[in-house]
Image (tube, rainbow, N blue to C red; front, side):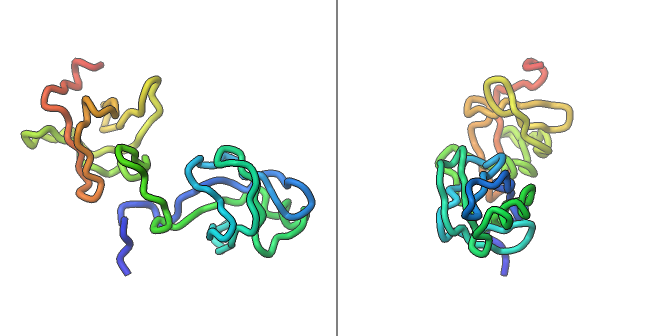
Length: 168
């Protein structure tokens, strides 16, 4: 079966098993992504093994969860440091104008007249906004500079007046 989003990585990390939280098998999620809810009944892979979230506390920025089959503190401590991942086809779709960074990587960045700046290699944190890395260029990822983003088409269009030399 062809995945709905073949450009995405097969597994996407949504957090890491942190320290145990209480005696019931719950643990804190370290480095949560902030957009995955860890809702009871949801599927998550722990070091590659499919598990189900049995209980959840906290919020998306500081969740504590318990997994089915890991119902005491010792079991939770045994998972510490394990990656929490979801499959690419289980990802929620970002809202309008929002993008996963890994969806932007690999897109061609070009002007409306067809001239190509290159392919996005990475997305970096900037002071005010994200920066698209294309070779040695850093392109501010804002609508005024990159007005069109076509993730399924793997293409982004630069504003016709954008001059990367003038930005440096």
